Image (tube, rainbow, N blue to C red; front, side, top):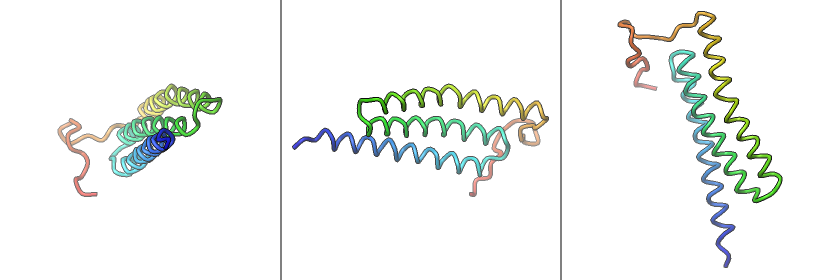
Length: 116
């Protein structure tokens, strides 16, 4: 029996499921975080990692070929543009006067409540 296709399918599904998990964590982080800057940070980090894992899982499913090359280019483009877009949004928010949420003493401390 040839085990290689089964191992490839299991590895690709693990990558796809873990990428989906990071997207869900980013969505929960967007709801839970107190201000626009921490929301952008939580979403951008988990979105970049989740997208990379999803693309890697799809590349394993596609095998070697033109589709894998296109997925690689798409992933590289996403890894280059997503952090830049997040930085531009944060700079625009800062320019518009949106300030980060701070504690009364001025440090970032524990600004998030413990209960969901």
